[in-house]
Amino acid sequence: MLAFAWRANGGVSATNEVVPGIFIHSETRMNPPTHLFVAEVDLKNPRLHLRVSRGGPDPDGPGTWQTTLLEPTKIAGREKFDFVVNGDFFLVNHVKDAEGTNSGYRANQWARVEGPAMTDGITWSTATNARPALVVHKDHSVTIEKLKEPAADDWEVIAGNVILVEAGAVVPHADAHRHPRTVAGVNATGDKMIILLVDGRKPGVAIGMTYDEEAAEMLRLGCREALNLDGGGSSVMAVRVGGQMKILNEPTDGRERAVGDVLGISVDQN
Image (tube, rainbow, N blue to C red):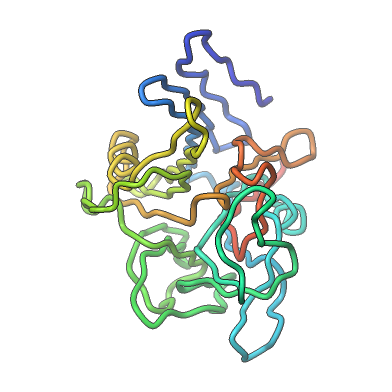
């Protein structure tokens, strides 16, 4: 059962095993105002299956576009995911990034993701320059690497824009802007994946994190490697509760944004 136990002074909630093998922890902090969710995924649990899924189908075959935008919870419903977060940065023709009612991102728009992407062993996006990516290999191990395209032993690949933690150390970044964030990392033994969702752009409530702040957070959570996925209005974390996908955070559009791809997890039923 999903039930976060908030403390009146804005503290740490209880940790909940929302679905077998996925523990979700929520926290608020007052100085600075911060609201975050942490999902700890047991990579050794044979019931869990990590999968990358594009939003909708490739709209133009071998042309420029690779996917069509779709809301993450709708992707999760189609793919029968029990947990989902947004994925890579994406581009849509003649649409500029904006939030709320000004956001131009809508379902079914033709789009392309900026990094490499693979689903079920099939590559559907490559990059001109190597970009950080979360890689699920054919042997089910999970790593974070810089790739132009998936390798022969890869099975699922989803990319971000920058490495935050490398070999157990923070990778410093000059950009000090705070934004909503979605972050993925892996611990030193490779048996746990950490996904961090940070709300932001809500003055006095949740101001987001800088690259260095989220890197320090991932290091604190035990990550040896971590990368930054798409953020801003795209940042969303949802989990299946009572048969329905429930969004845990508060996306800045006031609703979940349609995106190019997602990282999802399905759980075998008993």
